Image (cartoon, rainbow, N blue to C red; front, side, top):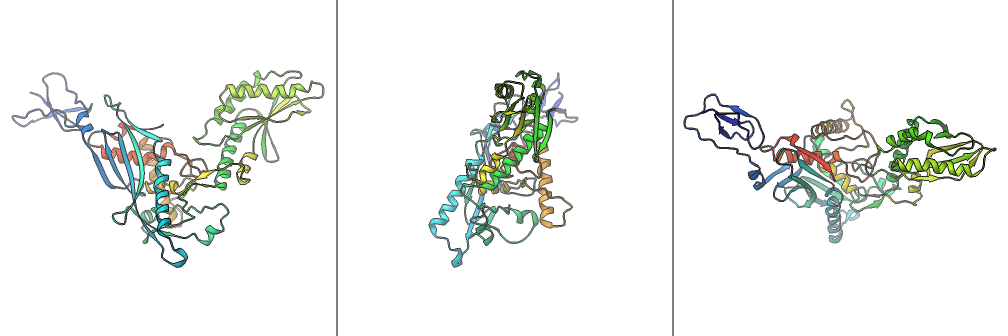
Amino acid sequence: MPTYACSLCKGTFISDGAVPVCPNGKPMALLAQPKPGLTATGCGRTKESFLAASFEHDPFVPATGRGKFSAKYAPRTGHLNISVRLSAEFEAGWLDFFGPFEKSALKESFREAVPRYWSGQCQFHCTRHGWTDINVAPRFGVEFQDTSSHFRMVMTRESEQSRTNPHMRECRGFVSLNQVTGAPGKDRMEVRDFQVSDFNHKLGGATTASNDRVALETALRQSGATVAVVATQPVATLTFADGSNNAAGFQGILQQFVTVANRQLKGSHPVPVLLKGFANATEAGALAGQRASAVETILTGLNLKNPVTLEAAGAGKAAVEMKIDRAYEDSFTRDERAFQYNVAAHEYGHMIGLPDEYENPQMGDADVVSRAKASVKRDFLALAGQAQVAIPVFPSHTSSMMSDGMTPMIWHYVTAWQALTYLTSQYLEPDEWEIMMI
């Protein structure tokens, strides 16, 4: 009887008719010379056997060459546990003394911050026919222990640079840097540099808000409206017919503006769009406000993500001016707005293999550290391509967790995705897992 073998599970099947199909959906190959007396084994990688199995690998080093962690997956529970083990050493000098309570508090703050920012943000979905009910929830954490650690860290008091830093942050992205450069020594963290608790990062708020404002100004320039630069600020003018407050003729321009403006990253700031209506000398003054309100109605109807603010009416022309609020970003340095930041959560991203997005190292750079970072960036982008997810811009100052914000993005989960595909490779192909943000 014709005997076939599955290309994935290597199980054997006997059929005297059509080519059989393994339950795992993989193609069958005809065995030219099956062994005498061979008995069909059936599928060796069924969904049932998959669900009953458990998978673990420790340490897992992602394809980026940076990061190291334990990966455990139990299909029955639906959880993939990503855990980094740290050994924490404390400087013993009299200027660096840490008491037992402070040591414990630093560790606990770290343990608490990681799952709060990283867990519950995405899931991995199985796309194989008949297996689409399988979803995996990755859970992230850190453990402190003196032996078998993935990273060794020495905690010290903040440097003079940190003490004089008005923004209370000097994140140097050091975690696992030794790993990618091959340099000796231990990863070091200065207590103020490495904020394990949330703090108001005024510079981060202002920087990311400025980036989001620039993106909106780009949308304004690309809208098709007449745009002039007034004191370095782009201002779009929508000119009305005399005596009219009908804004229907600007529908296309406003639609184009909204389309581009709404392509903003998750977690972007709600930078206001400012509208100022005008009326000329021969018109009723009330037309100025009516015109601005008419434009606001169209923008709202087009589901613009940003708020719209109407400014005091002006005179001298029949028009509405659109511009992007620049006072919003300045409000962070005035402490009118808070921008909560947690360096520990950002550094954890390095521990699981992710690069900084606020820099753009190149393979041809003279500095060995820069070249090492460029290698991590290159391999990270390749891994994101394999996972078929969006990628960040290098360099960029955005709301992204690995840039200047605290928002997890879909590409931040590619190393955990790779760990899952590695663990389940005997059952599933990498492209049968997809990353989905919640």
